[in-house]
Image 1 (cartoon, rainbow, N blue to C red):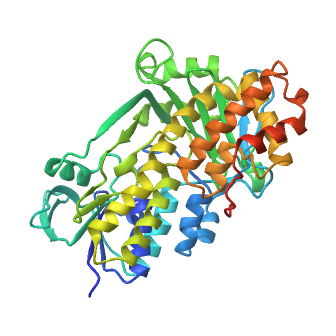
Image 2 (cartoon, one colour):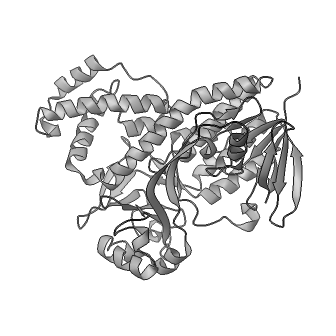
Image 3 (cartoon, one colour):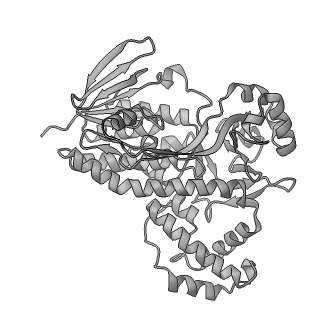
Length: 459
C-alpha cells in the first residue's frame, strides 16, 4: 500500500523537523508557510525570544542528523547568573557539571538550517501561503498569498504545526469543537539587545557568555541569552496592564529608560540602542493554550504550539514540540494505513506530558522572578545538591529531569512534587538549615518513601 501524501501547515522548527523526518521515511511532504522564506527574506525580528535547546530537543535533532550542525550555531549556558540588586552576580548551575548544560540558539538561524535540511531530504516548501480555510470532507486546503492570489491544494493527511495562532486548529474547531481554552498570564514581553563589543573571542561579550542571566525583581524580571557573535537577546517580562510597573505605565522609551535606570541600573548602560529597540519591538502577551482533543479523526492532527502553546519560562516549548515531531513521525511510519489510530495514540502519549510541562513552565516563572534569590528556595536547592550526590538513584532535581533527561514530563512533574514534599519535611526539622540535615537520615527517607528513578539515558 502506498504511503499517504502529507500536507503540513507551518514551516517553523517543529514543522520543518517533522517534514524532514517523514521525508526520510519515504513520505511525500508539502509544507505551506504563511511567512516568506526566511533564507531569502530575512527572519522576522522581535517576535520570539531566543530558544533554549536542551536534551529533548537535541535528541530530536540527532534523529535527523542535525544536532552537530545546530550546536555550531549555539552558545553553551551552564546555569542562571542571578543579578539580585546590588549584590555581585551569582551562578546557579543547571546540572552537576558541563555535561548538563543548555544551549542558546537563534530561532531564525535554527529555522533556516532546518529548512535547508528538510528541502535536501525532498520536502516541498510553499512560502507566503496563508491558510484561509480547510474543507475536511472534500480534503481541500484553500490558501492565499500576500498579493491576494488564491490557490487550492488537495490533501490526504493534514498536520498542523502552524503555531499558537493555528489556522488549521481554527478550521478543525469549526468542524468539531476541540475543547479549546486559553489562560492568559497577564504578562507580556519586550525584546531588547546588548550588542557585541569590539574584539574577538570572549571579549566580544559584555557579560559572562556561558549563562542565562536573570534580573529577578519579584513580580517581573529581565533575562539575557547569549548569541554566537557576542550579542545578548534581552527580554523584559512585565504585567501588560495595571499599576506601575506594567507595559501600560511605560508608554514610550523615555518612561522605560527611567524604569530601567531604577530597577536594572547595571543593564541599561549595556544597551545603547535601548530607545530604538523599545519603540520598535512589540510586546506580545503570554498565555497557555489547552485543548481536549488534538485531532479530527484520521484527517488532521495538531502538534507543537498549535496543540499546546505555553509560556516560555522553562525553555521547553520548542523542545516539547520537537519531541512531538519525533513521536508523530515514528507512529505514522509504523502504521501509515491507520491515521485515525495513529493520531489517537499520539494524543494519548503526548497530551499528559504537554499539560505537565505547561504547568511547570508557569511555576518556573515564579521561581525565576521571585525564588532564585529567596532563602527558602536556596536552602532547598542546597539540600537537593547534597542528595543528588549522595543518593542519585532516588533524587534528581526536577529541573534536571526536565532538561537533561527524556523522562516523560508528566513523570518529572509528579516526582518533583513528591521530592519537594520530602525536602520541606527535612528542612522543617532544622529550622531551614540545609547543612544541619543529617545526610544519612535524608538518604534513608528518600529510599523508604520513593521508588528508584528509572534508568534512562540523559545528556
